[in-house]
Amino acid sequence: MVDKNVLPGDFLSTEEEFEPGSNTFAENGSIFSNSVGKAVKDSKQKTILVKKPKDISVADVGDIVYGEVMLVKDNSVQLSIFTEPSEGNRKVLSRTIASLPIRLVSKDYVKNMRDMFKIGDLVKAKIVSVKPYGIDVRTNEMELGVIRAFCSCCRQPLHLFGRQLKCLRCGKGEQRKVSQDYALK
Image 1 (cartoon, one colour):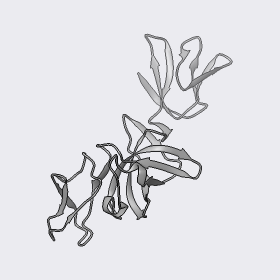
Image 2 (cartoon, one colour; image 1 turned 60 degrees about the vertical axis):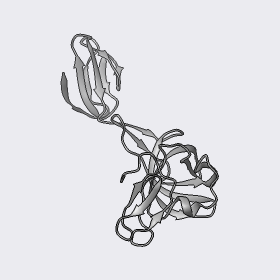
Image 3 (spheres, rainbow, N blue to C red; image 1 turned 90 degrees about the vertical axis):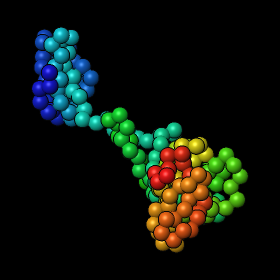
Image 4 (cartoon, rainbow, N blue to C red; image 1 turned 180 degrees about the vertical axis):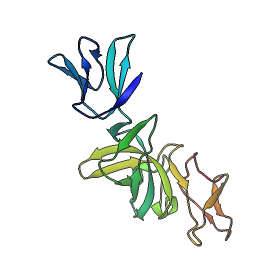
């Protein structure tokens, strides 16, 4: 049974009526909320808890992020990154800029980063390290890489035909490190 929205420090019940559950604390025989959310009383188990609207955690090594290519250098790519909520959990980033070094782009040899990524491409990547000075990501798995690319001539979305990207407007073919999750097939 969901009772009401509560704030940290709100009185929920007495310890005579219910046992304190998650996101609550007991003090002097009373049970209080220690977070924002909805108070939930379980009459069968005789517990009271506070259910948070969303769990928020910091993105860490192994988490999937999405980003837009901002800068392509000879040996790395700079991405403006964000995360998507998964299973009701929201991940926050300590930084919003990530670096993709050339050694983590593909399992194959990469001769030129400008063939793998262009400014404006949307990329799915996995966090490799989170340090005070920045986040490093990788795309060297099949499901990681460019998920949406744009023609370098006319900026129209590129469509995937086999392993080749092609612009339907101007007919130009381009190469990228394409994810198996590429949007336009």
